[in-house]
Image (cartoon, rainbow, N blue to C red; front, side, top):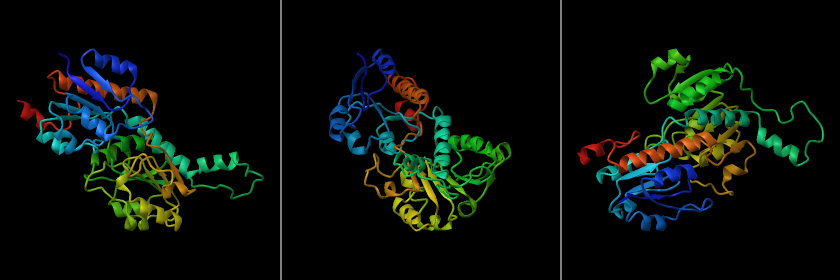
Length: 328
C-alpha cells in the first residue's frame, strides 16, 4: 500500500507525477486561497506525509491529530512555521530545502536595494500618472550605491552571495553575525563589526538572519535611531526581525531614508498596512526565491525529502536529526 500524502498548495505537475508514483496524493487545488486550518486538521488525521509551505502553520495542536504522520516536508529554507520541538517529541521528521535558492534570493535582495536606492517604483508611477511635465536638477533623486557601505546582518549562504554582488559595485562591506567568520573575512574582503557599529556606519543595511526567539524585533526603535538619516534598510529574511511600527515611525520622521521589504510579520500583508502608504518604501510579496528554475528545484527537493522519509531512507535535508534515534 502506498503511503498517503497531503500537499498544502498546488505544485508543478512534473513534481506531482513523480510523487504519485510512490505515494497516494491529495492536494489543495486552489492557488489564490491558502488551505484553511480546519481542512488541514481533517487531512492530517490519516496521512503519512505532509508537504507544506511557510504560509502554513504546523503547530502542536495539528500534530496531535496526526495518527500516522512520519514526515513534514517544508518547501522553504526556513521552518519557523513548524513546531519542530513538538514534531521531534513525536518522532516526526522535519525537512527543508536549503542551498537551492541562495543565488536567486541574493539577486532579489540586491535588486530590491537598487530599486529602493534609486526610487524606481516611485519613478515608474510618477511617469505613468502623467506627473512628468518637465525636468529639474533634484527631481526623483536617490542614493548612490556604487562605493557605498553595505552592512549585512547575518552572514549565511545568502549573505555571502550578496557580498559577491556588492563587490561588483565597489561597496565597503561590514557584517555582523552570531559567530565571527574570520575565514570569510579574508576570502570575501569584508569586515566584522558589532551590530551597533554596523548600524551607525552603513549606508545600506540588509537583514539576512533567520527568525529565532533571539532575533525577534532585532531591529527596533533603538537600532533604527542609530542609523544614518540617509540609510536604507532592506529585509528579505523574515518580517518579525524588524519591528514594523518602529520602522514606520522612523520613516515618516525622517530618521532613515527608505526601506525595501520582501517580508512582513503577518503574510499576506493587508493593503491597508501603514508601510504600504509610504513613498519611500518598496514592498514586495515575499518573492525572494521566485524564479522559475529555483521554485521548480525547491519543489523537487521537498518532494525528494518526503519520499525518502516515507521509504525508510534518511532525508537529505533532515532538520531534526534527533528523530533518527527515536526510529532506531
